[in-house]
Image (cartoon, one colour):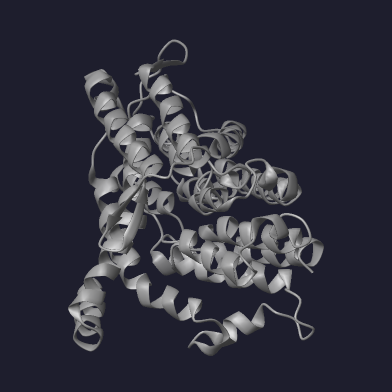
Length: 404
């Protein structure tokens, strides 16, 4: 699919522009994206939560709630990779736990990361553009609390029904009981803190040193961050006890799947982003015009749905930037007089990343890990059936309450 775009593009517009577009997509977006995901995947995959938890409705709900809190501090990828394995292991004696993984994606891999720039890439890009670190938590905390709270309540009710009716004859638990709960690979908690520090450093550190890579500017803070993340991943692999990786069934398959999929997404998204950036005169002019009211003022509800819809099928980070710029692109204005618009853009990008498997990178990683553990996950459209029935009605309610 990448070649299906690149080859005709090179023929029509020239190989030089095609090459520079590819370099920009890779150097400015894809490579930092994959390096961060790889570091989080490696570090969290080296932490083994020892002990056999038993997947009761109360315990499962508690794990999802903890994951929602952690997601805004260690990223949706870090929280997902840390908790998905023990959650699956806790439910490996039950006959049906697909719903557990689906709600995990809804809550931990997406909605929970909406409160800080560390939580999800779109918010981090906004932070780099000048949005205050604590602006998001102060402006969409109520929306996040509503969405996560309702999802947790719905999950508990569904899981209780499944536990009492569908799992009335549970399978033999393949995980042996052990005394107490503990951790192996504790050094990775320190390395996780280093990952967070490197990400924050790249946002706060302003440097005039910029490298030009075929027309793409690459700042020194970003280079230091990415090199540091590679070092952290290598240290994790070296320092983590082999027993922790074996117990976690750590493997590179899920990370490889995400890296390949998003390589295609970051390249084939080039013309889509260009058409959106063309504004009202471009092929997507109808979408751009739809977010503006007749009097010229922004429509938060339409920003919420337009950002969310495109984030569901494209990468939510560049989609966030497109609508950030459509709304004016001035963080000082967006954080004050247009706060409702920026809140709608932020919420749409993060919340609706849960609508499909490709809306956010952790979705695919969790799916791949679950399937490698024997969980029969829904197909792409099967998963969308879950999100359309559960998430979309909640987004409609949120629109009338907060984004009118």
